[in-house]
Image (cartoon, rainbow, N blue to C red):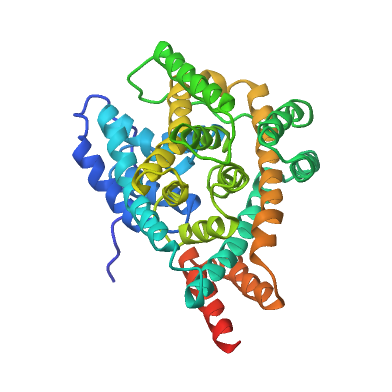
Length: 412
């Protein structure tokens, strides 16, 4: 009987070997952008397989530490990890190549979905849109349960999550999201003092603390500009960029957490109606690559009086940019910051508050806009079961919910 040879254990990065190229990075991440279904958690598995096990660009310890960094700063964690791996491997060109290759397929697909959205407001198209809303119900419920288990596993953090949810439901408004994040961090310093800090690691970055400070300053300038931009029911390119930049700057946890912030950015302002918003979010579940590519759909839907492609591009870049700037600011100083206990406590509180944000978004608009009949409840429960118990890809949930919604419409 023959046995396959054992998989070699990846060693640490060899700083003396030649760097990779942007072309190499682009090819690897384009493959991931076309095939990486399943959301941020699944993406981490794909990245580990391609970059640690297969190509040995990082060792296991570096990969784990990079994941910890990306979970501790706002932004899309899997995209940030890809951006950082490209940076480590091939410098700035590698970082840009990783981002473009991983994001472009899903962004183009979401832009195409926006082009078809106007044809889905009646007949069979309306059933498809309703099915996509029920996909959002199942997916967000599953994400909420998983995040609550991981980020609010004890009484203090559960209390922070519940308080954050209550504040959002009662207060709402543009500043409520930011206030809840700050509130969570402050309570974390008090209630989460027993949370242990992760082990520190040094990353192979090619710049120091001065450039890191410049990236942090750029992030803060962008955030300040986005906060002072007046909110209006009439969208402009500046207000669109500001709304999506502010969203990207406040998304701790990535993935489904972007939902309540995007709702505030484009639905509460009247730029996009709730039905279209949830249909776009549901469509994103069927796409490979980062969920943040839903920005291409929403940017194309915002009425700017300009080509839809311009709105899609601005929304997409504005949503990703703050997370990348913060990541670049943190990488050189991570080893020192991670050793500080207060940082771990504050982040634990912020993450718990994020669970509350997502719970409030699940209540409104996901459930209120998506579920209207007992049949809707049944479709959503089956979708949740497929994700939580059978652990299938979200793509199967899309097929189930849309197919069931069409079948129900035909029967009626």
